[in-house]
Length: 558
Image (cartoon, rainbow, N blue to C red; front, top):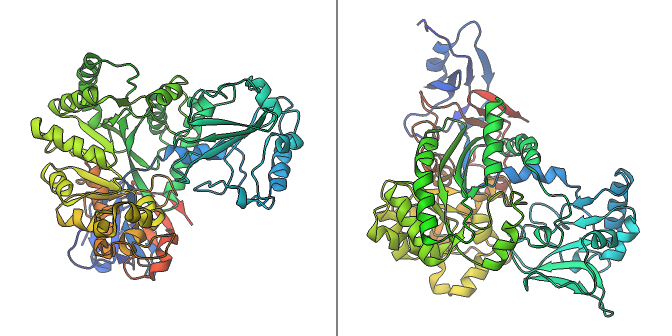
């Protein structure tokens, strides 16, 4: 048989998980950025020509690339800009680490480091250090007296516990004009003082989103738009390295993040497909302001929904106003948004929030919300203004009951699940809070799938890989107790992979182009050293691809 246009590349001799059902497959042929054949070796080999690159899989597994349903991908590269304090096991080691950084830093220049603790959670507590305490200003003064030093606090959702802590030396306190008479801008931010009333240099935050860097330490360097642009490629590579080929940013992103994604694409340097939602800035917005915003933005958002295969702007993020004073403090530092990458003043009071949702539904715009309570708000809106067909999203709800699941299914709402938080890190704590009789409401993936809801797995950047999420969805083990929580909510590995591929594509409105390995679809795929359907469960969280291919091009090879 003669092929008019041979394939550019054929991968053969493997176990192909197409996620599309049908006959077993051993090989895939790619031309340009598209799959042209999937099947047995001898069938796909007919697409071989003189210039076709042949990759022998030697029994390895080939499957669609993973799609992260709530990634915060841009954060990962930013972490490389700040010196790390990871692996320090004593205050003395922290001092030595910062002293070494100071030796390489021009005198007088700010030193801003990553938070205390180890990635990806950056948990900080006194017992983590040999001295049984956290560093203070005097420790950092020993590291350097010639540089202002700020140990930035963690993004609170990384450790998942409060308070978080940031630490400044004397030079930093002086530049920030913080002394014994300084008052905190918020009761959620505590300026620790010693017995004499002097600041210790430690600042404790009882809010998951940081405050100190946007208020007391505005003079310290922030992430700039240029920082976001030049680190985005590193972020993409980090996700590619664990087999992720696409992300959905349901929390919304600020303008400078949208710009970074687009400029990277325009330069031809994209290796990760991004579907973004707008994070509005609504400080002080009236009811009229909100509805006018929707009317003004609707045409642009509908146009940008078409986007392209690399970057697409799909709709907007909405949330209730919480901690309004603190949100406005953070927003006052715009366009700097720190680790967030979204606008801090997206929240609205109840009346304005419902007006926004109704207006978005009338304009047929897509909306993503977060947490269980917002599922009820969406269902209330849907009773008056239809949202079916819009693929609205409830992101990482901790719990959902049978009534909420039924309403979500009836209205075509999709759910992104944060198994890292609500199964692995806190399932037993949630069960203690709601009672054992309701444990099947905790991250109820089985119930959602049985109801016909599209569920997408999500990393939330803690860590970047989706493989622990695949394991957590199938095993449901709680870290603190090592117990299985709500075993009836376990799903099969094939279902978990479907959530990470097929359903991720559906979440992005891209099921015709991605999510399965079929002729005519984009050649986004990963080569795995083991079969995720049959390998030992304990190795699933550590699974790393040998190769990641996006649009027919290798973007990672181990």
